[in-house]
Image (cartoon, rainbow over all chains, first blue to last red; front, side, top):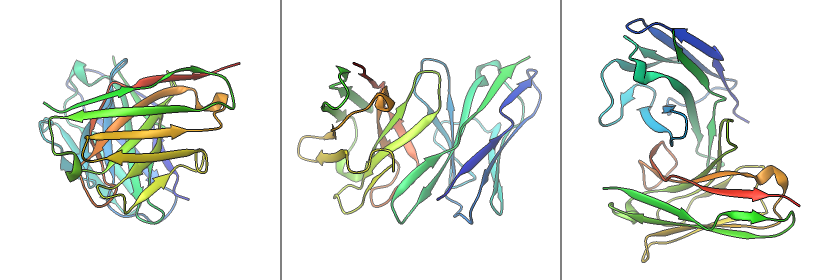
Length: 109
Length: 121
């Protein structure tokens, strides 16, 4: 079974600084990884799909990359609106299912 | 505007059943795989089940397999989740969600606001 590990658990970043979030799979996985941002009391929002493609309307400060089973979400210049929890998500074609990582909480310093 | 409106949540005793529904509008429903994702308040996201546009691919999380059944009615733009043999571990906010793809599970483009299910004696 695919298990996703996200690190760090919590990240405190000052506005304007760079934030780097990691998602690692325990198995060899495809590049079909997505990133979501969730603010308290709100539904999640898709940021990145297929590891590096920004979803519609997502600012260019968000970028995704992959190196083998390691995936990275980078926020180049943190905006206070970027606080919240970030989840990565992988998919399996067979059996068909989705897997979410446990999340990284981003706080604004 | 894309809208996903869940209904059917509520309080139920362990062992009982509940049926969730999701009314979709603002997009071509049968152009998308649909999912149910749940979240215990204050905790992470857990994918529950998904179904491709034509029902050819259906998946369930191990935690609900054999107890939950997903279905969709493309003529009525609706998604359903029949939840049987509920346990306290099923207590969560249940989101209806739209995938970016039609023929497989990819990434979730849109989410409803969720319907709360509470299983308690």
